[in-house]
Length: 297
Length: 304
Image (tube, rainbow over the protein chains, first blue to last red):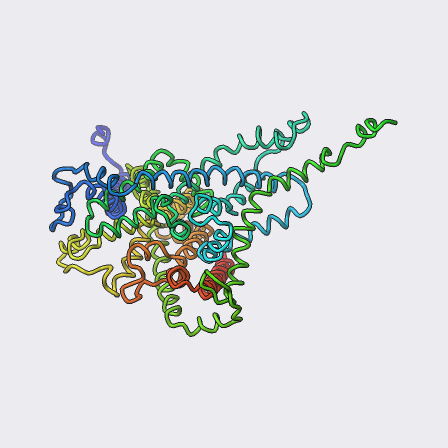
């Protein structure tokens, strides 16, 4: 910086310098606006979640106080144990965990098998089967809820784990995505194994499946999330409280405990925590999954 | 001359390379194909079948021909529910587009703490719509909810959000936007990051300002992403159910009775499974038609 003061500036250089300074100042202004916008968006989007957690630690008197207190004056950790004492929330959590994990694991296995078959094997009717599978994508779930319930009732699965789990497994989108992925894989490894005398099942299990680990992980996080957060199907297919999943449990709890918002917020936090934790652990995979799939529940 | 010699020359068909392909090919497809047939295919046929019947879920199904369809075109409650669904959808989808694209642009500016902001913006999507509805119902309490406290700071008197016919649907739009915006933001962000930087550099050299760069590079190149987001969010919006069930039960005075909620009530509360199936078929037709229309519109428009 000393050089600039020592040497007399030529006119164009001075102008350029002044311009640069102005631009930098303008950029600073822009940045400031952007940060302000980001902060507003943060308050609106993350605020309700933070408010939920904060309210879950307040007393009943404090939770709807006017003006509201941002933080609980004396955190009531007991609210959480009270939720667990008053309703079988542990049971709901376990049910959700069971349903979401079984659906995810079985769906990933079935979809990758079907996708491998469609992408690699030659047999009559393959294209037609693929088109038929794709066509089921056009059917929104809400449109088939009633007949699906009737079918599940025929099978005797209403109010059973089978009824909660099995109809949620088939999903054309998973098959479609995995098929695309397998088509993009180089065939050399598989062909070498076949030349060496490996059966197709072995090739699938020992070569294709391990190669698809990243995409399976991304899809898996997504399936788990969609099933954990599912509400309409569990609402329709279960009656007894022992089978309720978290989403049903929280909805019922809200009805029962009407104005005890400190407990309702504690229950909400319990219901939200598993997926929020999952998010912070698997964030990368989840974002990959969304970019790849863009599929939602 | 012995049988074994023949066998070594011509193995059984299922041991041939081709036989293996058939066997494993069909075998691997079987679980998912059966699943899709029973739990998606059959229900589609079932919806049509039930829609021509009168049925309470128990007892005999009575064939009623087109009577259900005849009833529904005069069913004021159904038409009202379509109107509510349309108002919701055509408010939700454009707002979702604007907000999620803005957020994606915002976290694509290389601000400090970008990762932190992105995670925070995305976090609501991890919460189920049920929990989102419960939390917002609490915040929208009248008069002591936090939303009323905040608008009170600006001198606005407390509003009975979910209890008023004017604001109940607005509240539902806000809650679902809050929950869904992070998801579309991630999709737009992926689309933005796919745009080659050289385009922007070339435009800058040509003297294009930020608005021109956005208008003539970002928007056109983001087109496939936009089409995807619009169609997906449209289909989702048309099926809105969870927040209605949890927050408003369709009220007050049917101000938030969406079509799917009306179908749910008809089927599982009034036990008119045949009539509800006819409503579902009509809903299906509408979703399909509008989706195809959207695809056409977007495809026909010339690329820039």
